[in-house]
Image (cartoon, rainbow, N blue to C red):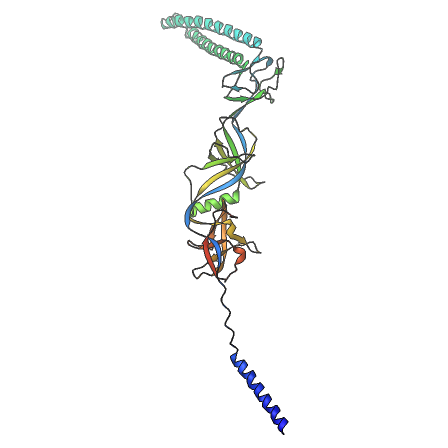
Length: 382
């Protein structure tokens, strides 16, 4: 009996020890909430945004003239230096003038003869008029004298026209520059036979200062811009300025101005041609060069710009941004963006003035997590 009682006592004491040990164990505390992660943000504000578009273009001469002969003959002399700067009226070629000089002399002789005949016919008409008034001659004789006088006056007029034509032809034997500009190489040499109205040009003259830049813009983009102007979202600039980007990446030192836009759309490309004019005093731009242009299209008032480094795209290609709301919690916003303006996106929908867009630390946060806003560095990567 005694061993059994002893074992029961030991078991009871052990059970009480376990119970006391269990009572001494403290209940675990609830897990602490995670601390907010500090991220760099940009606070959005509204501003008037100048809209620019970069478009490809090609240069073309301000004026171009093709030099052709207006009379036929043999080229006696070339009177210019190829590639030189010339003025309007500068002699370029001399065509053999001998036959045209002879034609002028003949026309002048015919005019002299017509003048002599006119003097005789005029005197006869005056005598017959007096005789007719005295009934000394018949009316028919006076009418014949009057008709002869009128015919000789017409002959004088025709002779004068022939002289003028001969003088013009003789003048055209010296081919003159029609405009100021730079002349190309000559396509003919001394001794070449040229014909009036021939298709082949003798040389070309191009005025390079100022110079045109013809720019192609999508008709769809132009339509959208005009719709925004009609709605009042975009204000038209008083004078559309154009800047030129050269092949080496530099900006052309002179600003240009937009001259006009074509009234039709190219059916094959779906583009509209815009023409800009640039000063070209140093002849740095030559016709036919490909260039890129930055064109001022207008000003969009009270618009929002968000940094591109804070805008991402989801799987469907829609723009999204992480924003810290008033409660300090990260929100994912779906956006509608417009064009790029420098290193920023023009935001059309999804953000408002005062929103804090996360641009640094995006990989550390997710929607619904607490975050602490700090001013972002001025440059990406800093």
